Length: 541
Image 1 (tube, rainbow, N blue to C red):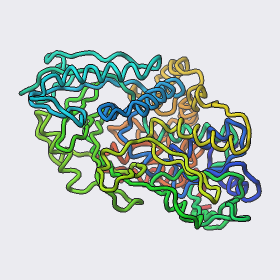
Image 2 (cartoon, rainbow, N blue to C red; image 1 turned 180 degrees about the horizontal axis):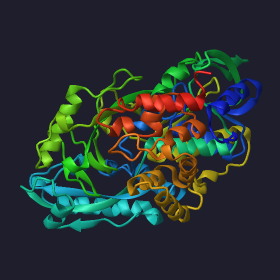
Image 3 (cartoon, rainbow, N blue to C red; image 1 turned 90 degrees about the vertical axis):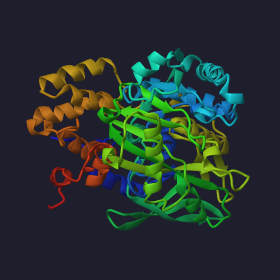
Image 4 (cartoon, one colour; image 1 turned 45 degrees about the vertical axis):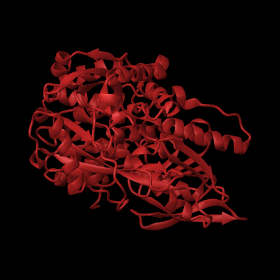
């Protein structure tokens, strides 16, 4: 029998949390259930605050599930001399590798250099005829390693032409001189957000999805709470809190406008589009590939992603913030460079799926600058209404953004400033990698494929044992949802019981990556998922 605990996030717990939102008074109300909001909720709860988090759709439903899935320093910021940003991100990369070892793993990047390259990795300057650019890159990569300090993954190294071809056999060889290999890390962004949310719940945070802030409650000119619409229960409720944090990314201006005071936030959304392709089609091994140069001085990555590859990203203007889409122009742009650097002829037929998201860039002071040149630094802003807004940043630096936000709240309260999340393991990390061996043993005994066992470990860590317990109780839950992907039916039940999955799309798009990895975008399995959910959540009783 399944027992409800308050840090499991079932639909029953959600109903309990909805009641708590109205009946309790909180220290901190966090608006936004993306990676930044999740990080703020965890940091606040770890510092001893009574915390509530509300998200208008589902956790990680916006930008936090639409990234390149990289945990990286941002090599493209080095040529802009953005050393502080790169250092901060590299330190955070190291802390993530330490605090979520199952979910964040090192990955090697092959950076090829060609005759005629003038602006590799987006260098804003060049040299006569490109002479000495290789040496400049080498110096830059030494700096990249150095800025990571003791958190460095592994030192970069020079690759001869043969070495580049061996590691990236699909690259065009004509004009290829040599290259470099350097190291960063990758993660599943939506699963990372979920792990942070679950850890915050363990520390006592009251968490709900599908709860939208519609207005603020004001007392003596300062906001003291928010009116919330529960979109699933279709009810209105009021939440009271001493501090309110706006962590809504690209929607920060909209939320701040609800205070009725002049907006301090200037967000310049920048759309990033990615293509998902088959690793087999790209002849891609375990190393990622950097396409060194584009006409608009961007940097494009081909990154291995289980049996797939992610290729991106673009940096274009804005559109419908709620429903970002890849336009024909975006797809054509990416295919152009893929076919320029790879000796394969890839077409739209090779694309398994596309996805798009908006980066919440803090707007530059000089209007008219390209969003590709806007820095990814973050800012914590305090409105005259009392609202605290955290803006900018990137996936990799979510923890530091949350820490800086909580430092502001600590100073407001005159309480000691502590940084508990620097060494706080995320849920699923306990006992890893000893648990990894247990998982492999138990998974094999249950007849699961090595691919499924690896997938469960990489996405759930020690929590994967709970999924195996479900399979032990009911062998039919070991069945694959889709033949050529590693997901099993037990994950649907786990998402309902532990991760507040309320709709089939929550499971297909965010608790798993089926909508990205499946050629049918999950359409062939949506009825099966809905049937499992209906029984679990008692939709028809």
